[in-house]
Every structure is written in structure tokens, then in C-alpha cells.
Image (cartoon, rainbow, N blue to C red; front, side, top):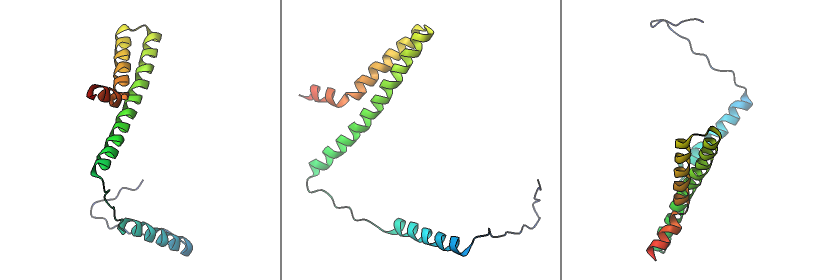
Length: 115
């Protein structure tokens, strides 16, 4: 492997590219540039309450997904603790399992509390 010294002049060479490849690259770059520069007008909804409800539904969907992940992790943790006979890991697994259930059904729990 050749090491380059600080003051040594380095020559740059272009990579070999056929005319067809260069033309395809130019078309690809133009399409990407048009997609990045073009703007799309976003119109606001007429009903602001509908916007808030849609945002709430989206956020609770994300929270439900996180709860499902925790629920799965808790099940795996309890299974591993049963295999290794580790009581502290089993307790942590059941706590993670319970937390996952609470987070998964957070919207329903809040609706029950609010009514």
C-alpha cells in the first residue's frame, strides 16, 4: 500500500463511464433534483377538531406499537427466566409484561377514566 506524503502532488482521474451510463446518470440526477425542488401545496382541513383527532389517533397508534414491543419483550424475558430459574429476571419480566399491557391499552384506560 502506497502512503501519500503531505506535500506530494496527487493526480485525480475520472472513473471510466460510457456515454449510455453518463446519460442515465444525468437523467437520474435531473429527476432527483426535480423531486427535491418541487413543492407541494398542503391545504389545511376545514375543521380544526378533525386535525387534532387525527393527530391524537396517530400518536396513540405509536404508543400502542411501543406497548406491543414491550409486551413481546416481557414475554421473552419471562420465558428466559423460567428456563434459567432466575427469580429476579422473572420479576422484571412480569413487570415489563404488565407495563406493556398498560401502554398498549393506554387510550382505552384514559377513555374509561375520563368518562
